[in-house]
Length: 355
Image (cartoon, rainbow, N blue to C red):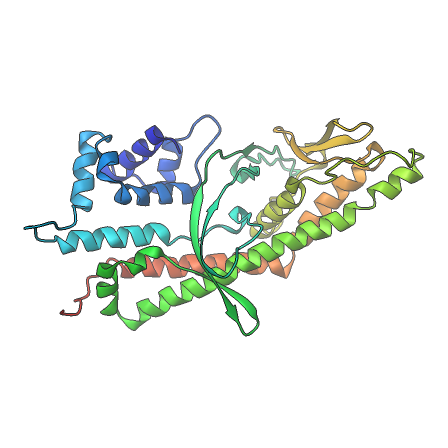
């Protein structure tokens, strides 16, 4: 998000106490609406601004920033520990969020150690609220692109008996003030945070694995396009296009299968009329596209376009009915429940240990 949009979001949240979902629409630009996770990250960033950045804010926001995060003690100053602890808690809450499964478009979780992933949603993200279903489930697909990193998540990748395990974590939990407060927190809160970290990592790993399985299956099923072209009498010396399938082909199966499962089949399956072709860059191959934004799915030969459409729609249904997608949605709801419990516990004051 640009600086003016961030300022507007901070004013809405910190001065007007506007709910995050309404903030999303308040900073919308054209058809581009920031995601829920983006607004949560931006809201948390307010507490981490440097004094130089704060000077660029309107007076009311500067005053609010000083209330929430006063300067750390210098010579001859007392530390307003309650305010600093509140700021640490707010930062922790901003880092504690669960990505919806359709937003997890990650190819690699990284090597061993603590990882910081900045996710770019510059692959087309389907805006399912705008699908516009009719009685016959005929959909108009709309999409948005994101020009800047939208979400920042923190992972801990480590070896385990079964290979490699992944955990989520929030860097704010390393703040000394937060650690002092957390030491006196009840065991149930500590268990909830440990469970969220563990289950959140498994959830991300499962989402990455499921999306990769879908892409591999789609590539296998569409690989017959060359044989079909040869049977249709095309010259055998004709070179294939560099990229028969785009990432959108598999990503949209994954995203739409999630919506198909979530709605128990009422949404997520585009009507055949939503698919179309455009002239390709490598004649005689054409571009297979989906919806009004003309989302580029791949480059089939004209004689097998319908076969690719059938494969795409069938895989949406099959994966939408799969245990893999069902488990992702179950884990997402469970993690959101744990997150809600943790944030409620963060509102409680526990007497810290005496030093």
